[in-house]
Image (cartoon, rainbow, N blue to C red; front, side, top):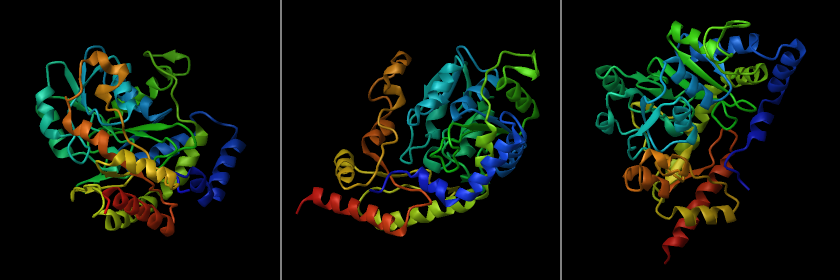
Length: 367
């Protein structure tokens, strides 16, 4: 069996460092908003090229608090994509705002040519999603946001270390990350962070994550309880040291897959202006469902990211979208398949995954 992910291997590769870091926190007796969180916030913000980092409880919380920090809420409209994970739109709705969808392109990223069509007087922000590990076309998005006086909140949950024109995401002033365990850099549980260049936004975010308190027992605003734990922070500090190395390994695995699969299925389309960090390696084929079924029988783990577009989710019917509204998104949902990619994959496993895909596709093609 070659699973789609293997978190146990991830732990075992650096077991001594993880164990030492965890014991350091346990020995300190300080578990909430202590030195580990403070140091990790500084380190990760600097890694992203930003001045401030605010650790929170999850990627969803990062998006929600970013919206709240910008005072976006009831009736405001946020432009995003229907081809992404549910937390993106769930955070928008939790803030009281309304998601306005635009379609994606062949690369499954926001089609920047569609953005202006949905801008109204209620539009307050654009939320591009750097999906699968590749950045959106931020130059055009920044230009549109400046023209229309809109905020940008970058969903970087799958893009730790991804670059656009030589600069790491987020490209704008504000970006939100998830440290869910399966991410390129994941905690051993939920975790998230917002990074920003704005001192004022950072100050608001630190109050919002801790009940709105400026100091203990002094609430200046309505807030939440969403704080990155010390244990997760110390685990993430270990992983941050190896993030570039791990991303490079992911890239090499992807290049190997490209070579082995380019004649068999549609492989990821990577823009030359971008550094893809391959959180996921996503192939496309109109025989996706049969391929997934056969690979499962052969012990090859796969996943569909994402089978039901957000505009067709039962929970969001009230938004008024229907089947056929976003052609590329709906086409992708029928064709995409994620195959194993993580730094701990062996050369033999990579070859096996590719060979099994090739065999299954050839068998389905017939004589």
